[in-house]
Length: 354
Image (cartoon, rainbow, N blue to C red):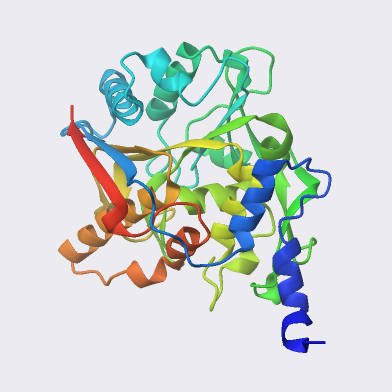
């Protein structure tokens, strides 16, 4: 017997079972997600470039709070350019159907100053409703309910209006669907050991997700944009991934590659009306927050994060702060896992002004 090829270490075994899909009912698409999550790091050149749309409205943050009408115009133009459609309804129907229950995954950890803005979320809700999604079938969510409240999103678990609640303490976690990894600091593992369970919002409450992060740096991962916002808002038992030498890599990429998320996330819209180049993700440094006055649109979270990383990197350089490019390894890993395009030569960044 060839022991070199047949011997399977516990770490490699966990890599092959890390997706924890028992009881998940994963079909062909899910198995493809498994392969991408654990397969080769060598990716072929994409057949076509990944498209990232950047819509800017200079002066929108001049008084510190954006005008609802201008945000709506930015949202509409971004969706038109991304989809090639000419009406709000048609643009949003590209991704969502009237039968969908849509989760809007926001980033509320930065309070009023540095969280996904209600004006951006309201513009998304308008698009979903235009596409035929029922108002009560829209759920604004994140991991912690108190973060939603402090960011300006009132909770609602009722049978009318847009719903809004967190995994903790409301929805809870799905004990059948998890991400398992030994690439962590075992001393920081919580009650679930090497497993991180997915929110039932992801696994049971919604059929589709639009991811709406904020553009900001992160003291551990360099930046937090699409990938980090989605991964660490969807599971529990996350402190174990933060210390050296991991810095949330490869966990951020592998959680996003899990079928529970990958099969439901359809759209990413980055709120970069105000952004942060140092002190994130919950910066209290007013001097490191700037008015980027932009929204980013796309279906490729790796490409969007690469563009966002470049913008933050440029802002840090302008202010004589050290580079964070090498810290953001999770973005490179996500590209290798097949979650999107990292190579800048294969990313088409289309910039608009409205």
